[in-house]
Length: 154
Image (cartoon, rainbow, N blue to C red):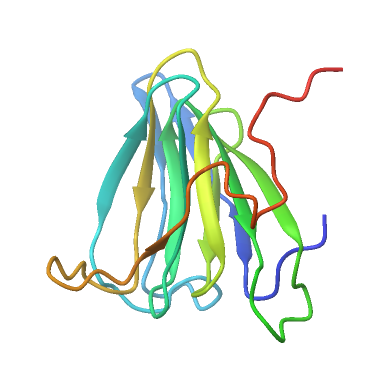
């Protein structure tokens, strides 16, 4: 898949043993993925729920689905971008542990595709400013974005 300009994806290493497992998500010495630390938070979605669309003017998001499975979808609507109009889909979670980094101005959202609630850990570069959020939203079914969230059978 051709990635939207500025998007980065990294396969996460899971180390299992008889006690459980360990998965390192982000390190400050990871020159490829670490930009800076703003805050860390988790967000969830129940099965079949879509949380989309939004983008940030300043913030870079870095997502890891740590429980369940999420379909993370990105859309490049940036004027002047060499990948304008491109859509990226990532299936992330327990069956595919990846880190997805989303640059500013790239629309994104996700849908829980597992049978139980899925959890995303986000490590954004900026802190959330409650009285002036760096967030522009569109509805999940916005005609401005050529994407259908329905399951693709076949």
